[in-house]
Length: 206
Ligand SMILES: [Fe+2]
Image (cartoon, rainbow, N blue to C red):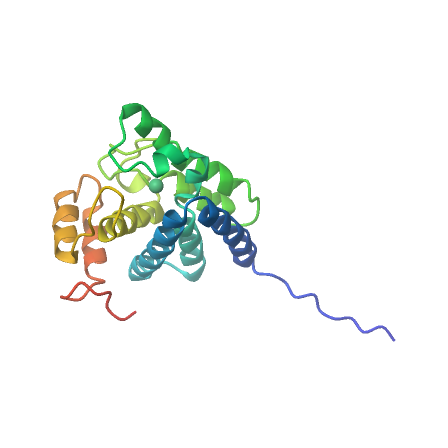
């Protein structure tokens, strides 16, 4: 008698997760700071996504999109990634290509959820008022998950030490981000994000 063992079926998101894990490992070898930043952004984005009521599948894609939002920096020259001073116009044009390079990389995974994650990666630098890149999308035409990552990304970028800046305190970051509400960030989403923190600037319990 032949015993048939059930072949465990992998959930679609698990396939994407395994590919994403390989890509984040590659990114870590290229630029460790970006990897560590992306992990924190993924955590913040997941908390905000949950507060927005995203379902399990959407949250999974959001976390992966957030973890890979800067994977396109693999294609940006070292001289720019590690430049201690401000970038000039030509350097910014090169740096900005990372969102489209990232989209291309994630779209090439070709498993369920990859196209959605790629879309999020492409649009993580769009601004609520349409002044962002690469497509200048405006308002709710920007995918919600990309709007969530834009807020989480900016927060973490200001909270840590960069070659060109000291870390800022939570209250200072809130002031800076509040000043960009309605321009860079969606006002209601920014309010929901600030609601994740307690009075001392610590993330409140999930
Ligand atoms: Fe980015």
